[in-house]
Length: 357
Image (cartoon, rainbow, N blue to C red; front, side):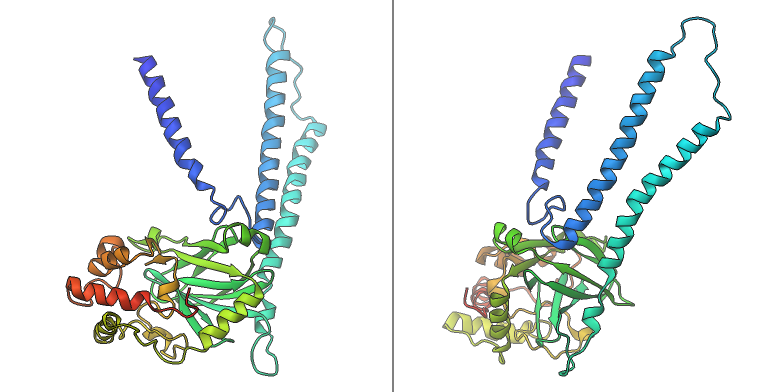
C-alpha cells in the first residue's frame, strides 16, 4: 500500500508539472517582462526572493552547526548567552538592514510608477502630448477610448511600442482590475473614481510575440471573471499612426458588400445596433454604452475575448452566449436566430474591418 501511495504522489507531481509548464507564455507571463514597469517589478521580486532565500540559508546553516557542534555528549550544560548585548545588537541590526535594502528600491519604484503628471499637461490644442487611453471595464468586456485621437474601440487595445502609454481606469458596473501580466502589475477599475497609471511596451519583446499580448481581469467580478480577457496589439509608432488614421477615416457604418452580408446588416440594424456601435467615433455617453464597439470586429484575434475568431465560433456565440460566458448581459436580449439568419449575420460581422486584414 505504501508503494502505491508513492506512485500516486509521483503521478500527481507529474500532472502538476505538465500543467504548470504551460504558464510561461512570453505574451502572458510576469516572469518574462516585456516593458519598463514589468522589468522593474520583476527586479524587485528577484531582490525580495534573494533576501528571503539568503535568510533561510543562513538560518539553516546556523541550525545545522549548532545541532552538530552542541549536541548532547554529557551532562555538561552549554554556555548560556542570555542577556548578551552583542548578540542582541546583531539580530536587531541585521533585519533592519535587510528591510532597508528592500524598502529603498521599492519606495523609489512606487513613486516612479505613480508619476502620471504627463497626462495632465495640456498643449495649445487643449490635448496632452502623451498618449492617453481611457479604459472602461464592463461585465465582461473592455472598452478603450483615445480622447486625443477621438476614436474608440473594444476588446483589442492598440498601443505604440517604446513610449509611455497613460491610462485612466474606471468600471461601469462592479470592481474589475486591469492587468497585462507581461507588461506590468494590475490596477483596479472602480465605479466611483478614476485610477491612473502608465505602462511601456518593449519593441523587441513585442516582435518576439508577433506584437500581441494578453490582458486579464484580475478582480473576481462574477461567474465569467476568468473569461474577461482582452488582447493588446503593441506596434511601432508609424503603424500606430496609420491605425489611428484608418480609424478616424471611418465616419459611417461600413456597408455590406454582398447580398448575404446585406441581409446580415439588416438583422444587425434591427436587433443589435441598439447596444453595439460600428463606428469608432462613438458619441454615445459612457453610461449608455451597453456592449462592445464592433467597428473592427472582423480583425480581432478572438470572439468574446476567448473563442477562436472563426465563422463557426461566431455562430456558436450568437446562438447561445450564455453557454460561453455565463452571466453576460447579451444573453436573452434578442430572439432565437435561424440558421439562415446566423449565416447572414456572421457574413456581415466578419466583414467589419478598418485595415482590411
